[in-house]
Image (cartoon, rainbow, N blue to C red; front, top):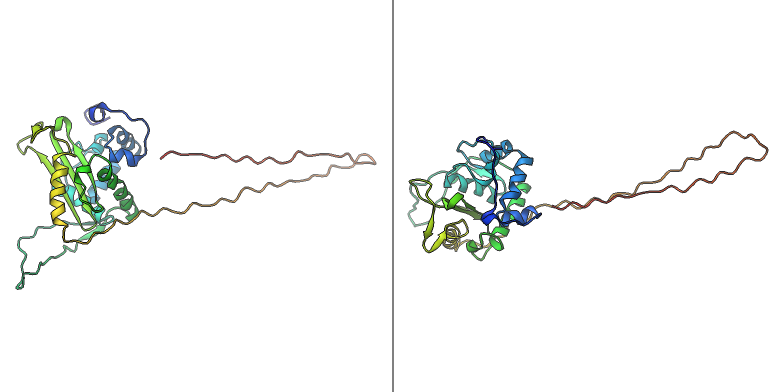
Amino acid sequence: MNASGPWQVHNYADEAAGTMPLVSAIAHSVNTIFAQVVVKVGPDRVVAVAHRMGIGSPLQPVCSITLGSQAVTPLEMADAFATLADRGVRHAPFAIERIGSPHGVLQTRKSGRSRVAVPRNVADEVTSALQHVITEGTGTAAAIGRPAAGKTGTGENFQDAWFCGYVPQLAACVWVGYPQGEIPMTDVEGIPGVFGGSLPAEIWHDFMAAAVSGMPIRNFALPYVPAPTLQTPPTATTTTTTAPTTTTSPPTTTAPPPTTTATGTTTTP
């Protein structure tokens, strides 16, 4: 349910793919999977994490938030994705008016305001999943020949289209749409309907390829996966009870051997 009533969820072109891991659902933007996730997690928690990561716009705790149904700015999205790039640490954005030095050396500064928005390993797991968007998912047009992570986004009736992504050193977000209102973007630059993996991903590719050309190629940190815990099999204990003797020769009792049953459970992620 949403604030205005029932929420009708469908995938792009009304596709259906059955059960799948969350990594595949992220890579291929399967809306119906994440509609189930937000119900289990709770939209209020989604709002809280979004605000911690850099979204400053007001957000309503309704289920459709998981699909980007509420307006935010490209700067806020870039801020949130930069939080993932820095492994869960959010840095407040700031504007640079002028950069210069007597010898033409690039001068940079940091805002000094930073805080942990999400746990490091959570950010690393999200980054690991978002890399699949570019390598084999909806954002292959954004591939720049080095490790990168990102996410496509497409509004109803092609009214908005997004691609936000990052390398370990830099994050950027591209929004394509009409500033004057939510107007469907059909037949734009020869594209019947503009979606996140088309023009936005291509723009992000061209910008990032130039922006990081002088930066060293770095890999993302791998998520920490705890080693499986070896469980000691249960020990069967046999207790022998001696009954009072009522005859000169005590009866012989044969007890059945103890039976140990192990139950295995397989969970599909």
